[in-house]
Image 1 (cartoon, rainbow, N blue to C red):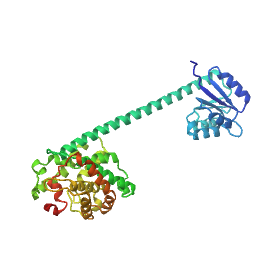
Image 2: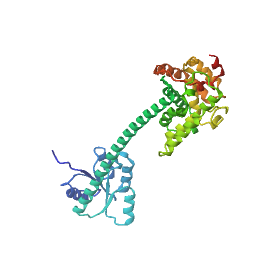
Image 3: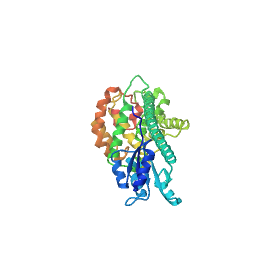
Image 4: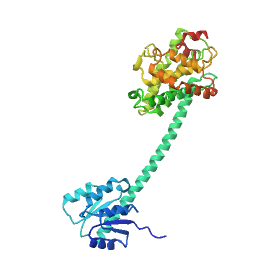
Length: 380
């Protein structure tokens, strides 16, 4: 196999200099003598050299203009350029280096010095390319590992959320469905450019994953209350409501034990505010209207809708259309009116999610979950 010879383009309007330079270098490199800056760019259309030796003082297009053009074209910008010049003033040298030249060699030059400079810069260029390849490979590896870690975290969080939600013998798809509802609402929010200032800084992957922990505080609620197949007493309902702050406190403890993470911020907001109501009658803070974070206002619709379409021993499952009507009844009282309008635009897709994931199992819907939505439920 023939030895690889690095390609060099030598640019000089003086034919004597071109001949001398070519003769000096051709035993070691493939040398392409070019008489002008314009011819240089014609040559570059055919191949990319390892280095360009560029004279400064040339008519029509001098070396400074030539290097400006080189650096403005992405395909050529990375080619090392060594200026060859008879100018020995500091200003000329500084100007060349500022324009992106890697070196500056004064004429007349000796063959050993020229070859050594070329050898050094070809080696540096090769090392730079290798570092870039290694960096790109490392970034790919990091992205892949980060993706796998995120998938593992999501799986663990999902299991924890299901253990919280499904503490009886019934399994179901509440967490899965509410995630899909939330995703639909957010996609529509983005599409219609609504509440831009509120969601502009969100990481949507973290937000959707964190939504699984919206009821994490129920892990501390007694099974007697959590699984009661009947209406809760006022005292029991007050106990049930404490799951919100219990969940917030649990997430805050996670924050204390790890570096700041946007996932935990979203999780805390959703867990702490998805039971707030637009008219200020929700809990635990009694927030009103836009004082309720957007994450909580969105989750309120997703959570209530899923409660409505779920069947339990003490209530029938409302149809998607009935659930949509009840969400509408809550406009301006329970729910943000703007988000109710948004919900109506994707309600058909909500119904598709219900049909798709209903067979995932029946979600345990606790008595406390329905007590606050519609008084007539006690009659059905």
